[in-house]
Length: 178
Image (cartoon, rainbow, N blue to C red; front, side, top):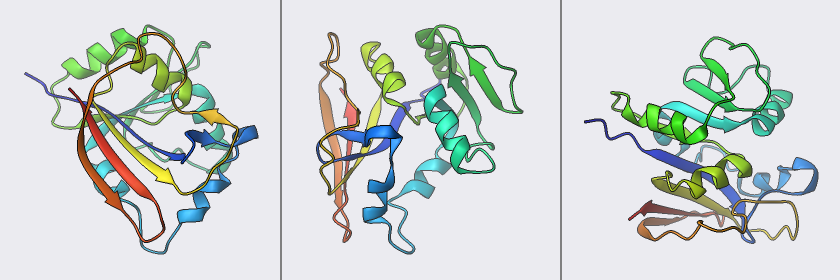
């Protein structure tokens, strides 16, 4: 029986924003240190599938010449159909159905939820995120895109797996769903 997990791996400000107004991610540079990836490379080796929102995907593609997860099977959650680009698929169907299908696949690797906030909160409403690895950046933004939005059916019990503190001031918390 497959035991694939959906894992949210994301960074946010201390006050809970994943982006400042106008999708500004410059606050992430506060913790950039030579040779420190905060466990990202180890994590990325544990996954073979990515779920990402269309707005996040489009923003990423304005920043880089090639999609960083081109070596993974990726589902871009969108309302507008587009043709696939190699292993990147633009998915317009039911998100819960997609997750159920992906979790049922026989794979030793997991599923990475790479944002954005709309996709994260849609997955939370369905209670299908199995693990949360959240890096807290030591800055307050005051406004922007909140990671967790208010709403019914979001309350979930979690169990602490680990807390890591880094010299940059970044704190990474890892929880799993009970």
